[in-house]
Image 1 (cartoon, rainbow, N blue to C red):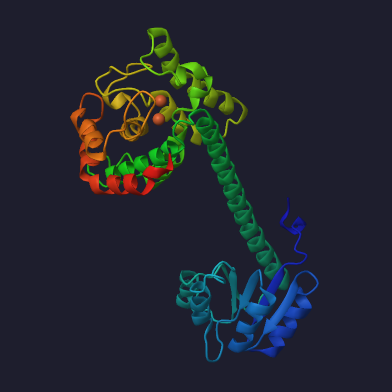
Image 2 (image 1 turned 180 degrees about the horizontal axis):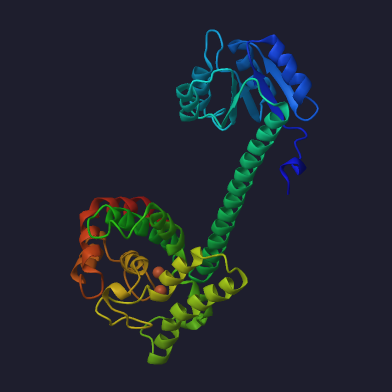
Length: 355
Ligand SMILES: [Fe+2]
Ligand SMILES: [Fe+2]
């Protein structure tokens, strides 16, 4: 697409210049192609900013009272106006000024006297760049909300089956986030855990047992010990859940964020010493997110009243996690968990009555 094919109709241009002649020139050159408003003083410019809400500003450098550079500062420090691109149009040719204008946020610099066709091309080019950025940003936001929606629906599905404890899914996200955030501050995990990781684990930990939808109700609600066959069935919730994610990924190849959930789902019952399931992975071979969720899941499950077991009090459950350091759980993560006991207790106290 040539730059001239770009539809400029309706784009609002605010032209600021203390010379009335220049403003008349702008109007005759640009109005019709753009929707042009003008201001010859600082006060008029501020009034126009609010009333005409321009998409782009043409700004003179040498203005009385408030210079073009100062005006750039005012725009960039006002969140509402900071996104409006500004083209400086000036007779000032000193390279230091030109550089200073770019440093303070100008999108382009046009020297007077200018060629009006070139000016139109520059304005159009910047409009196009800016609208391209906006489209991309909007797409990213839309994509993100689709992610959140999908994760939430999957979590809903998981909680529908796991109705024994609806608060469990919420708390496991809170505990996992807390452990991940604290681990991110430690030397051991600093390079492995980003802010995005912490957010993802908070959002996706609730999906860990999604594979339970395939387990017959009589097994899930069975009181007393399970037979080997029944336990094998329970174990399959890890691989079944991962398969569900794989099916979704086939239809939505772009949803790479689900790989993170898949790790949690598939490996949250692995143990540090290799005695877990489904693959018997050991140590760092177990994805970090799964090692974190394993602690959060076990801790919360212990504190719950279940059909087949009494709820453990906070300290007993906490000590059980510490006791399994290096056998069931990543020893370094258990150190982190021990260090944030107060914060874990806080989550426990605030959320314990939810189910
Ligand atoms: Fe599980
Ligand atoms: Fe769980």
